[in-house]
Each structure stands twice: as C-alpha cells, then as structure tokens.
Length: 434
Ligand SMILES: Cc1cc2nc3c(=O)[nH]c(=O)nc-3n(C[C@H](O)[C@H](O)[C@H](O)COP(=O)(O)OP(=O)(O)OC[C@H]3O[C@@H](n4cnc5c(N)ncnc54)[C@H](O)[C@@H]3O)c2cc1C
Image 1 (cartoon, rainbow, N blue to C red):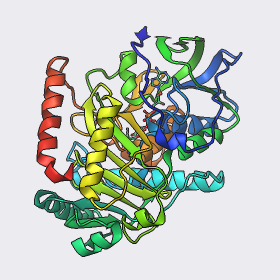
Image 2 (cartoon, helix red, strand yellow; image 1 turned 90 degrees about the vertical axis):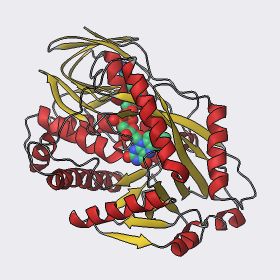
Image 3 (cartoon, helix red, strand yellow; image 1 turned 135 degrees about the vertical axis):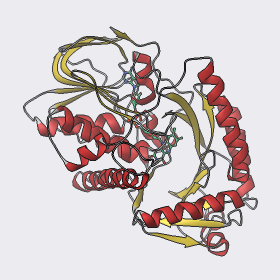
C-alpha cells in the first residue's frame, strides 16, 4: 500500500484566486464509491487527464480528488505565462538535442492550441491574451550572452522572435534595468486562477469532482483502493497528477524535489503609477536566469515572482520584504511599493529538467515534474496520459514517449545539501537578474 505522509497546505491564499468571486468547493463525498478512473490532483495535469478520459470513454465515470480547493493549488499560484519553448533539450536514444527540442516544441504548442480551444469553446473568462508581449529580459552581460545564444537556438528550431534594445525596453517597461530582450510570438498570458477554475467548471458530465479530500493511500493492483482522509473509493485505473506531492504517496521519491517560489500582486494602480510601468497597457517579463525575477503589468496591477526555497515554504513576511526590495530595485520611481497579496507555491524539479510520464505499474499512471513551467506541459501531458491509458495512438503521444525521464537523485541528507548548494550557486550567478 502506498501511504501519504502530508497534505499540501500554504501559508497564504493565492492572490489571483482572491481577485475572483468566492467559489463553493465540491466538498460533499459522492455516494458512488466505484469508478472507472480516479485522478489524484485537480491542477492542469489532473484536469487535462480527467477531461480526456471522459471524452474518450463517455460511458465511464471518472472521479477527481483534490486535497485543497480548485484555485488554491500551484495551478492558480503561478504567474500565468504560457510559453512555447523546449525545456532542457538534450540528445537521447531517439536523436539529437535539436530533435528533442522539436518534439518538446510540438508538445507544448499542442498544449497551447488545446487550452485556447477550451477557453474559446467554454467561454472561460480568464483574461486570455496572446497579444500582450512576453519578453525575456537580461539585466547582466552574462544574462545577455545566454539570451543571445538562446535566440540563435530558437532560430534553429524555426521559432520566431523579436529582439529589443535597452531603449525599447525602457519605453515598454518604464525601467532602464534591462539591457537586452527577446520576445517570442507564440504564447499566451492568463489569469491562472480564473483559467483553472474555468477548466474545472466545464469538465464533461461523467466527471465527478471531490475537493478538500486528501488521498492518503493507494492499495491493490487494479481495481485499486484509493483512501482519502474522508473515505475510500475503488477504480480500475488511477492517475497520479499531484506533481511534487506524488512523493507523499511514496512515488518518484528518488526523482523529484519540491521547490517553493513566491508571487505578489500590488493593489490596483492609478494612471500615474501605471505610466511609470511603461507605455504598454500590459506586459510580461521573464528573467534571463532560472533564479531571476518574473514580472507582469496586468489587470491595472503589478505582479512580481521571485525567490526559491527547498522543500519548505518561507515565512510570508520575509518573502514580502524580498519581493518589495526587488520591485524597488527595478522601479525606483514608484510612489508606493505596497503588495496587496503575497503567496507561495510548490513546483517539482528534477535534476535533468525532465518530467516523469507513463504507466508506473499496470493501471497506475503518472505525469509529474513540472520544472516550474507546467501550465501548458501539465495540461497536454495530462491529455496524452489519458490517451495512452485508453489505447489511443497519435504522433504527439509518440513524441512524448520519446522524451527522457528524470534522473535518479540521492536520498537525504545528500539531496538537500546538493539542492541547496545548487540553488545558492545559481542565485549568486544570477546577480542582478535576481
Ligand atoms: C509562484 C509560481 C509561479 C509559476 N509561474 C508559472 C508560469 O508562469 N507558467 C507556468 O507554466 N508555470 C508556472 N509555475 C508552475 C506551475 O504552477 C506548475 O507547473 C503547475 O501548477 C503544475 O500543474 P500540475 O497540475 O502538474 O500540479 P499542481 O498545480 O501542483 O496540482 C496538483 C494538485 O494536486 C493536489 N494534491 C496534492 N497532493 C494530493 C493528495 N494527496 N490528494 C489529493 N490531491 C492532492 C494539490 O492540492 C494540487 O492542487 C509557477 C509556479 C509557482 C509556484
């Protein structure tokens, strides 16, 4: 029996979720206890899986179990960037690093197309925007070098992008902090809590949602017994879509670490303050370094995301002061640096940047390891995992099966020492990108 050791809990509400009207979670335990499939976790991965299984086998019943509430998991705590790019492309048994990049780009591009079509079909009001620029900006010479080399790689992968000079960046963003930027054209920016809520509210009718129920154990070998702290269920197939928390069920414990990162939103800004954030009505900026700072001008507010901690959420007041300092550093001329909402969220990181995808044991499927950028990847991999489990073939599924899995990582204390040392080194190297 796989046993859970803790349920995900956060110190503060997601700021994006707080902006939305109150929502009543589906807390009531369903009378039905037997399902064709149970999906654990109602983030992008879990909802992608549940939707696709339900579409492929409309006569079967699917149960999604979520420990928290829709809108309070990492899927609603992120910065809302949906970018089409390959994460850590490298050569493997199926070809070169460029082949790997091409596969990864096809997969995430399909994720963007799929989410766009769902948002359109179900009229999900999530501030979906493909016109607002998504700029990767460098503040240091090292960051600029890395970004210029990345731009050349994008060209090799036939991915169009624009380049931005320091003057353009100053006009767009209202700060002279950055020295070089690139802007990819295939992307979207969203209000992530509104997107995940919209996806949950529009699942096919053969999907039942159970929130505020933590899966504590999975027993059996098909049918599986799925035990929550509020009661048990059985299913022929189980899909693990709780990302870093899969480890609390004893799965992939030697493949992933949990890294917390932090976001904040200001109150609505007046016209004068908004003008200090450049001449565009909205923008998104990603850092040139993994340990750098993300920002958005959105919904008349300013968003900042930065900082990271290993396996444990940092004290919210400490996070507030770090994010305020990073805001001030980039925009020294603002009248106020008040942050209305500050929150943390966990991401699942692997040592080689690859996620786990596949049938771990007969009837037990897993997609996990988002690398801090899982809105598109989680959604499309959830969909592909469902197709794989239902015996549906596609060239995209073949692409996914040709990616490498995550490398082995050592147990504690070596893991923690190694991870903290790597994060500290990367933070130091990031310099002003942080
Ligand atoms: C501050 C921040 C900024 C980010 N910015 C971006 C971004 O701009 N773009 C991007 O693509 N990604 C971003 N990410 C990462 C993104 O949020 C994740 O990659 C994404 O949420 C992964 O989706 P998922 O469905 O795989 O996992 P999750 O969103 O983590 O969903 C898993 C769900 O499982 C539930 N769960 C856990 N354990 C159990 C259990 N035992 N029983 C039942 N349910 C359980 C959790 O409550 C959770 O809701 C960011 C993350 C953070 C924290």
